[in-house]
Length: 328
Image 1 (cartoon, rainbow, N blue to C red):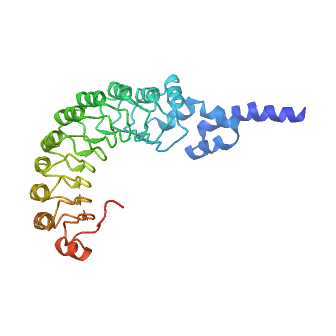
Image 2 (cartoon, helix red, strand yellow):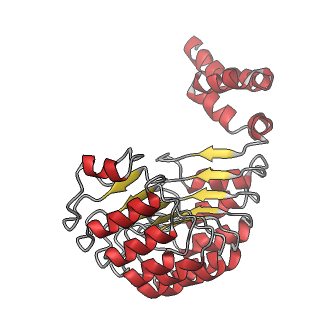
Image 3 (cartoon, rainbow, N blue to C red):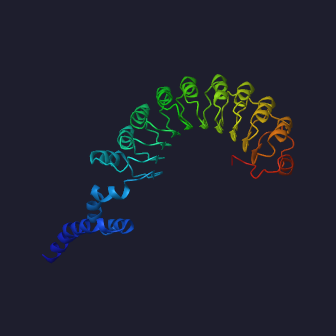
């Protein structure tokens, strides 16, 4: 009987006492009460009134690689009428693999002022996720869709139509995208400062040529752009503010394209030519003439046409170099 009374005390009385006490405690102490027992954790975690005042001005939530987060958590917040995310500006859900389109709908509905959303490598998400995002979050300027392999041109059309002020877009390994989807973004999102197209080999030179109209572009990753030619690169050279350019494995590029980049993009800090066999010392001479004072990272590993690619040779041409390898 005594044992039964003790269990009832732990299951019912202690959690109720903790609920009464916790609102008066500092944040750290209130969180510590969650570890007192499973019953305290359950009672306190379910008490939205306890936590909302403490988090009413949240600006950033980082749940990256939180493998136990799933749709239920976000749907539950929505059902409870959570208002503490009204001022949230950045939400990182990278690699939360248990989250689906349903979860994205629930969480974005609570974040009307969200500006940056990262959903890297949640491979089950579809264009329906983009529909929810553009409906619920009108102020997105930074969108990371890297690894969301089921996002198609339909999703890109929604992004282009909804976020003309978009500044950062990462669509690494979004393998369903075609020229049509990317072209919509390039035409309508003219304020882009960062564009990551890593490991996307299907786009044509026609699309790369349109990148030259992105006058604010500073970061461009085209690693693996197998259809990029010197003509496309010459158009990209009009992006005079470029500081980061990854051309690794852009196998159709030659000296002609790189010389155009050197002459047009004189603020380059990072340039990778890794694996391009069609470039020679000619492009290095042009880069040295135009970008020697800005380049701090230059990767010419695998460029068998470049003879002066030892560390000493490169430092002589680029005295501010600090890094010689982008790809390990």
